[in-house]
Amino acid sequence: MPDTGLDYQQTLAGIERSILEQALEKTGGNKKAAAQMLRLKRTTLSAKVRNMEALAPCPPENAPSHGGSRSGERAPHESCSEVFQAVTGLAVCG
Image 1: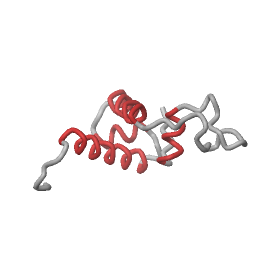
Image 2: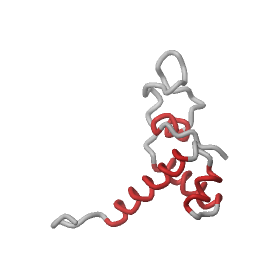
Image 3: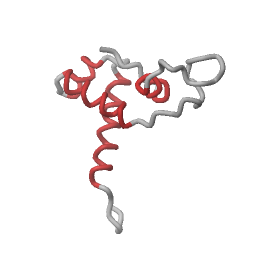
């Protein structure tokens, strides 16, 4: 621990995010399998992933696209969830 201390909640959130991402990566984005791996209910894992996606910064409308429109702008229908998946490389399945 640093002498100056640390942000407890932020540190725990980072650890949780890392664990969730690793489980989803190992299962190819399959939430049911990832939940079983972590001994969580699928609905709990889904809620944690939604929360993680909600906390992911959503780029402005003119940010570069991750597969949206050809003009380089983010497609209007492209959600933060889709951007999150594009950035992390995780295709999260039901």
